[in-house]
Length: 178
Image (cartoon, rainbow, N blue to C red; front, side, top):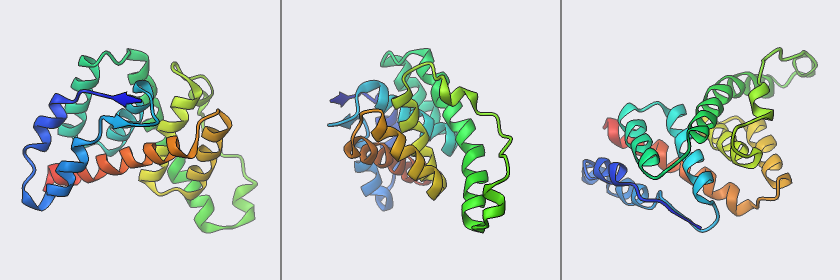
């Protein structure tokens, strides 16, 4: 469904050396998805980049998204997903890893109202949140966001593509720094 044009990302990947040849090819396929629409693909990529926080990668992707007509609301949701999931993945991963029922019964007392009222769609915001949960390795968050995505009428193919995009961007960030 999505076929994004990514000239800044293409220019960045051309700087990758031979050891990152596979990542160069993977990053070249970032803008294509048979399942995600343009908004979903831009959103997942931007949220992942904001969370990963590799400046050159984020700058290139942001420039491409703006040139590609991504609305400001999508940028806001991507930033909000990165910020909130940056907090949530630490807290909920802790609760899961400790495994004590006593922690699960305590109120989180973490404000995350934005998640219930994103500027784009709830499904798109959930895809962004899932991608970040995968990047952070929070099992509980991954399971909850995957279930929410399916409840919003998307499929496992949407889930798979969102995580694939996050994985490519994480590898690309390592390649940029190497």
